[in-house]
Length: 565
Image (tube, helix red, strand yellow):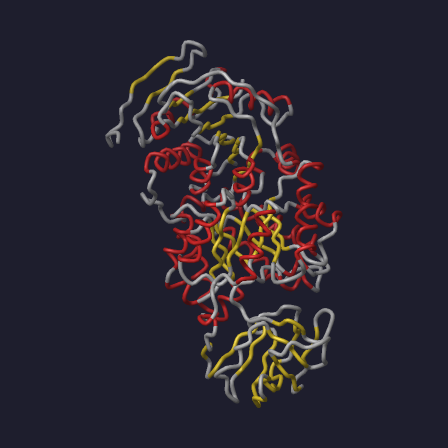
């Protein structure tokens, strides 16, 4: 490894007459600040270069730019682009081709399919519609499946949609497989759910949407009285409580059931981009699934959902093993005191950033918009707080899946996140209050280059960051630093492009990369300039992990600063 002290020497580029500096690996590049604060430098191209090896010429094609991001850039400029990504759950209200297109136009980056609901034919139809939208309409929307996991949930509750449980009404909860539906009878998914349950125990629906008290056990049935009235939704989750403490029955079930494995095989065969694993308590199931996918040569990212007390105990090992995290606050709030949820959320976000894993904040962000066209002010504040904490993505669940105002909900997410990002940049909040990263990752060269690049981007006030990447590592490391300018990630790997849809501030662009870095830069800037996306005088920080064939992979990184002429 290179020495820790800077190896600095001035040089003059004979082709551009631009003055710059050369540096050793992992070394801050602050001397460039003195020469670059004015940006234009009399029309010259300023460069700070960290590079090993030579490059060769290559061929290029056009840019695969998401049409929504392209419009956003043209209308709002670089610094007006939204950084926080949006995940939308697809359901009955949003599964048509037309509704999916509206969500994509509204800014949906990832479409989530909850495998608890609907048939494989239904999910297949939705996946193919999304892929058709990407191909024919110019979107870049990734697909995520969410496994059912070891949860106990409602199979049938006697109604076609939601049903209201009134105060004092008597209900039967059974594991019996019934022919058809029965009024006031709820079929549950787990045969042993009532074992060990006694009179006086409580049965809570969806973390508190409705509550029942057990008044009698009758064979496989629990006869219950409704003590807190509310809605029973299709596939609602059930939890059992005794004397204010959760009766944990999840440990009796595997993290990935036979149904989950079947759903995973289905998802990978349909080319999904993410698999979110429910009720992860340790890293073992995540490692097992990733090994399984690797053996089958499937490039699918595996996310762990944090929704239990046990998962918090093993949080760091779960984050390290996974490709990303979903903070499932609804279920998590059932297992820990409600007042702890906000601080736990922030701790998870900070840990994910330190370990370079994207993190989604999910559950009840705009819950009232399932029924109402406007959110509560508290919900908007909740969304803004997640953005202030620099979460990579926010997720809509029932709001987009079955609500009447899904398009308005995604509009609220977009407006609230954009406004908070603008405020954070204006007051320099991100750099002031984010915990320092330190040295956390195995690839210290790439980590330090991107840490320096993120600081450079802010100190030099560049307009954008261009990163040329095959596997997305450098784009992800740059996103981890939460720089002010947007990150445009040019890649020739579709799996990389779709995976980067979850990274905060990253705009993934399909591009036919070559080994010739100068040709890559020239071609992409020319194409973007021709479209009016970049203009003369724009300052661009350029980072690359594209490896020329003649160079040792571990030795090649590059970092440049250019001004568009």
